[in-house]
Amino acid sequence: MQIIGSSILALDVGERRIGVALANLIAKLPRPLMTIQNTDTIWDDLKAIISDESVGALVIGLPRGLEGQETMQTEYCRTFGSTAAEKLELPVYFQDEALTSVNAEAQLAKTKTKIEKGTIDAYAATIILDDFLKDNPEVHG
Image (tube, rainbow, N blue to C red; front, top):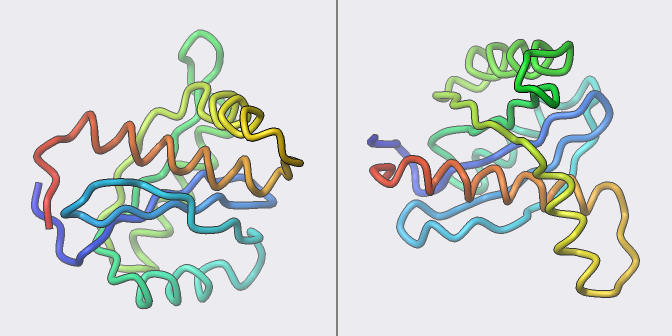
């Protein structure tokens, strides 16, 4: 899949915070970028990141229940993604985010530093983006 822009942005969307990760479409090495607050300024905040990083597409983590069923949070993320596609004028892809926060926390625990919730969110977004790129090897800029 051809993406216009030099990078792709992944979001781990929560009602309070959003973890953000970025990958260059040539190197395809996702990295945590930041965590932003999910407030009234979210669309302006995302537009600034998209402009600064030459983002050509968004990947949004899609949470599901323990048995793979859709939940209220799944619907929240789908609605967020639809709004993002409209407001940010970018293609939006969804990626299953099963256990990404747990895996992010486990990876960070190995560093033996104090772990903040926002750091976990950004690392979870990195795992979401890494999974998306592995599932879609044809992605390029």
